[in-house]
Image 1 (cartoon, rainbow, N blue to C red):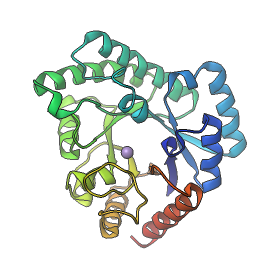
Image 2 (image 1 turned 30 degrees about the vertical axis):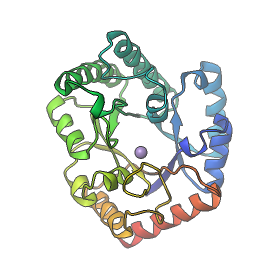
Image 3 (image 1 turned 120 degrees about the vertical axis):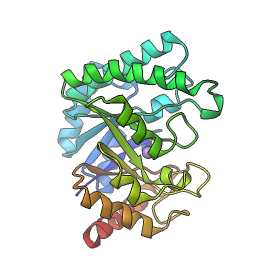
Length: 271
Ligand SMILES: [Mn+2]
């Protein structure tokens, strides 16, 4: 198994520092946060050198934080055509960055609250149209794109995400399943993994069942037995991607991340 980290844990640090701290905590792979201003040609070159020196792999281009916290700048399902076009171009840029970092994986989120959507059929149509364009560009580069289900958003439940994947019929479009999000939408961890056809990535985190607070695996209402079942399902499905840890607001990040790596390794060996 390969264990990685969503570097959003170190969002407040400079990109190079995020990599150093990830290495210090013991990870093999990192999700690169897709902030355009941080990924100019020159800065990418510096980051790639840094990754090489640290012997770290870039395993994912992560647009979760830039899209979800971007104040509406990027949105694949926006009613505003200009926003959708800007977002498709942004995802195309992510494809180029993925190629440059030698990863074949990008994840996206749908930032619109479901309660703010008057016509969800229309929103899904826009989402599908944007995805088709982005995935078409990605396909020619050998890159795959996944959506992460986020509670309360247009793509909220994992079952809804899997239905969307089936309906879209885009061959390089798949799922990122976040076990903490399953805890909030009350979806079964094992069942979800077994029913996901194109599983491109997974996130590990916990929470109080109501707020998406990304606490360590042993802190929250998600029982460890569900994490065990989730890992069992991943092994059964022969998932060979990264096990990615995604934690926020840590008091003692290195110590806590090391503990979470140990928890995951222990579960994996015994599952
Ligand atoms: Mn996540």
